[in-house]
Length: 216
Image 1 (cartoon, rainbow, N blue to C red):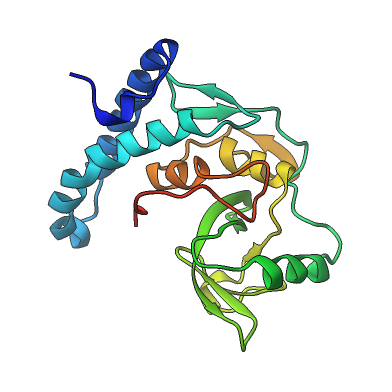
Image 2 (image 1 turned 90 degrees about the horizontal axis):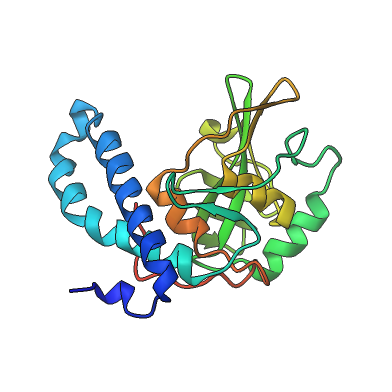
């Protein structure tokens, strides 16, 4: 019997859905097998919810079109990589502020530039708190940022909140990364990142598609 998620698929999409689910199960089980000891009490809950989130990610990836090429056997998107990381090299704080001042809302999907050990990446996060008076937004994983993009916490000083654009979000979804101004091998997105990325509305980044619930 087909799952509810499969009922609306075109016949040619069924195989893609199955490939996505199988790859995501294997990837997440390997990741969960490496759970640190202090987080083991949460492991049963994570395992119990895994089938739901894997099916949800596979369904959303097929439901919402994107300009990227889908590699279903590896559960990733493919696209040509920019020569350098598409982080602004000039002050774009006014443009970034204008976007978030107008569009900030709970659940908004936002790109965050990260630099760790000389590796540059852009990761996707979601807004879970807004401080209108302080003109700040809080990202679920990466913490507080000014609406102009600047980090607001000691732990995120190597990060910047960026304005969504096609170039930036291509880098996000394909796991592109750079070191010393050179392209490196793309990384595979986590299940949480795939769930977020599959909700992107490529026609209007300020209005992401809805999900049943978000993986934390």
